[in-house]
Image (tube, rainbow, N blue to C red; front, side, top):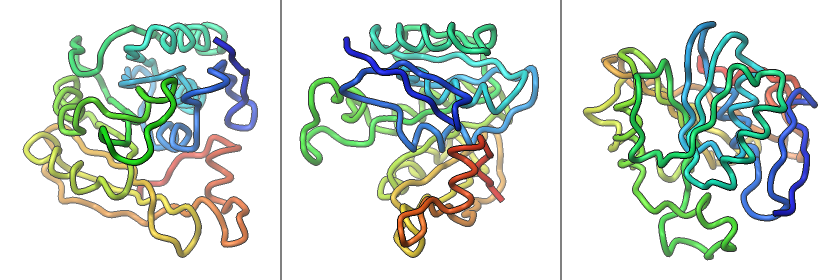
Length: 239
């Protein structure tokens, strides 16, 4: 496999990833920026790929440990390599496992960036990208499986297409509550293309739709808020 070495978060994080196929992208950084946890917590990423979000989260959250689940053995091997080569090797563990059948002790939080496309939806991606882009199970199955891995009060955090928000909310119904949503706009004044969603086990708090984040100014430059997330490891603000 041909790979490249790439820097994230202004050089704080380095990942080796396939030169072709699925690669770390903006959604990876935004997902990591959305996480909140204190020292001693253990968070799990479902479908961690090469570990980009895990590493970015470890850089942002000192004292927090991480478990990455990845069913593709090649990606899992790269994730393990990236974790071992990072300053946070003692806080990251990679397991080769399928998200939908995973089991284990309850976690202080779970996060994921699941495949966005249904089979037959859109243009079929190249074989190297297919597993990362085409979902072979509905989002309800992901949410159902991951909800079972949460401690009481712990949060599931995910990023997905904005036009799939109705499916996500339907899947959360009866499983998790206290739903919070941050819309992600490609540019100021444009409709949201992504949503970051967080929901907690056992919460009865009402749904909260927070102010959105615009990634770019109309002229294409990063907004100050986005620049802080991508270059300076700033958090995504929920309130």
